[in-house]
Length: 339
View (cartoon, rainbow, N blue to C red):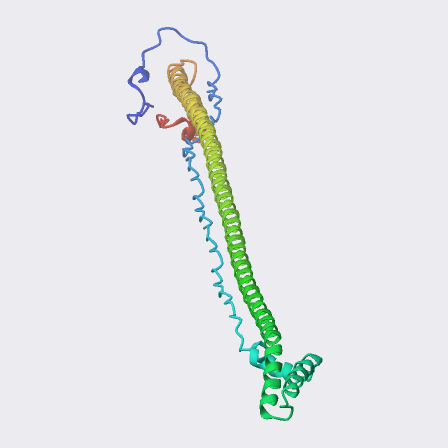
């Protein structure tokens, strides 16, 4: 019975049947052996790795600071003062300062002086025999006037001078008082203006200093916040960049390891497939050898040969089934139909 080829066996193992020139001893039917196959582990599919991306952290936005404004304080308005006017000391004519008044007072007082002057005038008239005459009376009156006039003038002058002195003193006192009041008012006004000006200057200087200090502190704090934000962003970016590099390096290492494993598995797979091909060749050669031995065995009758060939066919089929069971792992192996 001829071996049917399906065109899948390599040309190098195509069966060639030659006649046997020796008489072999009858032997038992060849027990074909099937190759002991192992199931190779398929290489795992390459797991693609995605790069770990570095997302930079932006620095926090700058916090704008508003300047503390300096509002100057104005000095209090000047309080105008009203000049104290001097009051003129005036007087009316005192009747007592008049000679006539003093004269009348002296004459009408019937003072001893007037009595003496009148008596002298009457005595003089009596000596002339004119005691009760109008002439004597007039002479007596004239004597009294002449005696009283110097006194009346002196009294009038004294009263007038005293009145004048009093008026002058009052006038001077009024002038001095008005000048003192005006001077004090000017001094007090200047003092108030100066104090208000000093106070306003002190308040302005304090407010200006405080505003400058607040603005300086605000700038310092703002710069400090900006520096800290920038530093934190830089550290965060460096950390994220380092982590991304490490992650990428690990992913690359894993990828390289997988590629190396796949390459090694492929080499093992190819070696296993080659071994499978060799096993197929060995089984085929064994079959051909056994087949030829059975066909050319002179010690076997036709029935024994039929039985032996049937057994050989079954054994080869079992071997073929074993190979087919692992053909998925070995790849495409040549299929043989045993006849």
